Structure formats: C-alpha cells, structure tokens
Length: 180
Image (cartoon, rainbow, N blue to C red):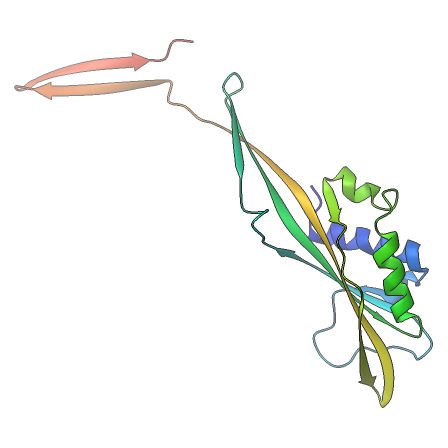
C-alpha cells in the first residue's frame, strides 16, 4: 500500500507528464514561512496530499476465514491532492490536469495500488496573488481519490485452559482442550 509520500511522488509524475512543468518546479507541500520564490515567466505547481472522511469512508467490513483463523478488515480512505499552480499558464495547466487526470493510462500506478480518482472534479479556482511587488496567477485545483484499504490479522484462540473448581472445601482441576 502506498504511503503519503509515495502518493505525492506519483501525483508529481502525473502532473509533469500532463503539463510539461519541469520536475524541479513541481514542489511537494507548500513552504510554511515567507513567500514562495518564483520567476515571472516560469510555471510552478505545489502539491500537498491529505486525507478526508466521508460517510463512504466510515463503514469497515470485517470478514472471518475460520479455516485460516484470519480476519480481514476492508474499508476506504479518502485522499485529496491540493494543487496550487503559478505562472503564465497556471489556469491552462490546472485545466489540463483536471481533464487529463481522468486518463486511466496516466493513473495506472495509482490504480495498481487500489487508489481510484473521483471523477467529479470542480473547475480550477483562480486567485491573483502579489509576490515581490508583482501580480501572479495562483490557481487552485483539488483532485480527490478513494483508496481501498485491506488489513489482515490473525485471530488468536485459547486452545486449552486449566480450571480449578473449589466447592465445599474440595478442589477439582479440569483441563479443557479444543479438539481439532
């Protein structure tokens, strides 16, 4: 199962393939202090992956396999990739990602890991931003996914137990064993 960092790296690969933005200009997570350093005529994308809950992600299905003494827990996890695009082509790049991310070939590595895109993706949102006395296009796009979770656990049983019964000042030992 892919972890958060692996999902972010795969989304960077997908964005780079769709937009042609240089890999060094697609950055995982957004810096926490100061303004981002960006050049006026260069395209950038910031990628941040987080998780979300919905009514769909809450049910957990439990299956028990008696012959192997294993329990399987199945559920869904919601994943959202928050993308922030900058540059002269910010809106066009976000629009391309919105449309072309539905291409199943581009998503094959995510699908292989049981991560499926929710295709109802909202339009990109443009918000101009002033950076170093210059206005830039800042465009937000959120891609949502569900990941199928599957966890197996061994069910441990007590195969035998020794019981001491004390009544009327008499002690009796009983050993109970499971027959297989």
